[in-house]
Image (cartoon, rainbow, N blue to C red; front, side, top):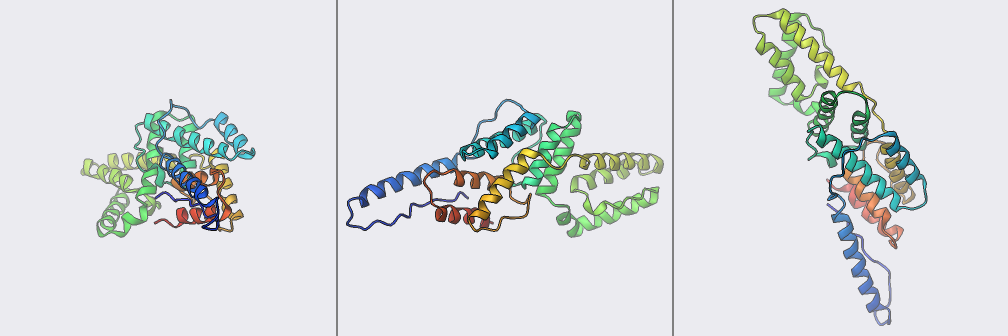
Length: 270
């Protein structure tokens, strides 16, 4: 939920400036509500990758003096990642829930030289792990039973794989289907399972950092610290939180106390 900034300047009720201040305060609140409500309603731009030019632009903007440049760079990164994923036919509904570490990884995937198919699969893997962590799937009775059966099948055909606990539900299903399709042909099942495991390894073997994304989160964390707020560990802020915090810090005329209150609200939302 969006944080609301309030005008808290104290003016005596009988002062001639009291009515004027209330009017100005109400206008500021309305303007800020509009600004925050529109934060994630940008139209999709033409496809661009998170290229070296974007990173350079992000760094230049963030190292400059104007706060609005940070909002512009956030918008550019957010839109570019969303447009790139949409072109690869990757669902972006949960993009705002992802941590900045995951957004950084997606940006790196979009910017590498792999085929679109490889990029799409790698991006889907990052998003699925973010939305449905592997630990959640393995703790359910059904998930544990499926993993146990998969391990038994892999052992039977001579495939030794120690990464079962880290697989996504989709990857477990992929491997399980191999044995369903090759019930009477262990050599074929072994070959297909090994191919999938190799592909899974390649999906995770991508650069995990994107300079523009990392620098943007670092700048937000620095501002939080300046307000006396201990920032989350690097990479842990979500894309939505970074967007809302950047909008708060961009507000002209807001006091540090107002910014701190609003920032705390963003960080404590469940």
